[in-house]
Length: 84
Image 1 (cartoon, rainbow, N blue to C red):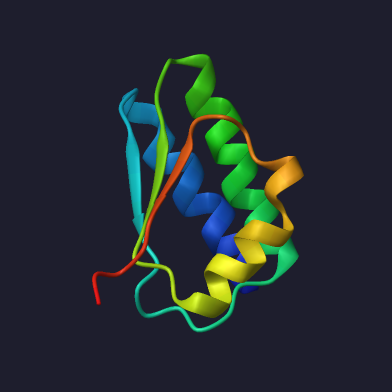
Image 2: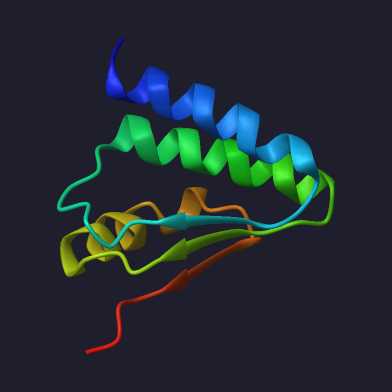
């Protein structure tokens, strides 16, 4: 099973509880656009329930990818970089 399929399955399970979803990205060095789209889809589903997607500790590279995708971001995504 491909990484984006695993991510999609896990996100679908995680958003069922109707609360904010926190995703730890601290050990992820790179994330492709396909996986970012899965995160954005999850955020859109969470937003319907008034919940947020919280991305924790993304590396500088992942933060850059998030910034590039900024126009696609649902308004309920928060990014908290790793403390330095």
